[in-house]
Image (cartoon, rainbow, N blue to C red; front, side, top):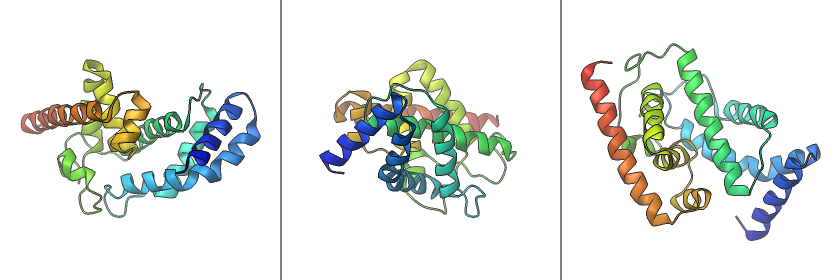
Amino acid sequence: MSESQSAEITRLLHSWRDGNREALDQLTPLVYDELHRRARHYMAREQQGHILQTTALINEVYVRLVRVNLEWKDRAHFYAVCAQIMRRILTDFARSRGYKKRGGDVQSVNLDEAMIVSPSVPFDIVALEEVLSRLEQIDGRKGRVVELRFFGGLTVEETAEVLKVSPDTVMRDWGMARAWLLRELDRGASSGS
């Protein structure tokens, strides 16, 4: 994305924040393709035949964004909020579809496997949500790194921009968070909970 496009997105976000509803209409075509790419990246990890499709996920994100009243900082902040919303939507959807904790037709996979865009590798989003929530209580930044990278599809550099840390810090947090989450997911799977 060019500097001018990034600046235009930030300008429109500020205008929307200041009450200009038309700014959202102007913003939508500028961010739609990127949101769709990120949602497609995420949805590729869901089971084939998943009822919720990429476009429906993006539409639901927009519905929730309209209800949000935030002090938009910039483009990175916008995508971070969208990642948070996608996480909530997908977790709520999985719970509403009756996915059982550590069960259903979902196999457990590690975060490395799940990060690979592959429609043949479903994972237990409800179990991930539970351990990620615990991680956020212990170390909020590491939890945000997982949310932004895993749910939002942000790159290391984009995640660093959102969190106002270096890419090296993001990589350290990502590695430590993955190890902790894997241990907790394995522990839960072993105990049958």
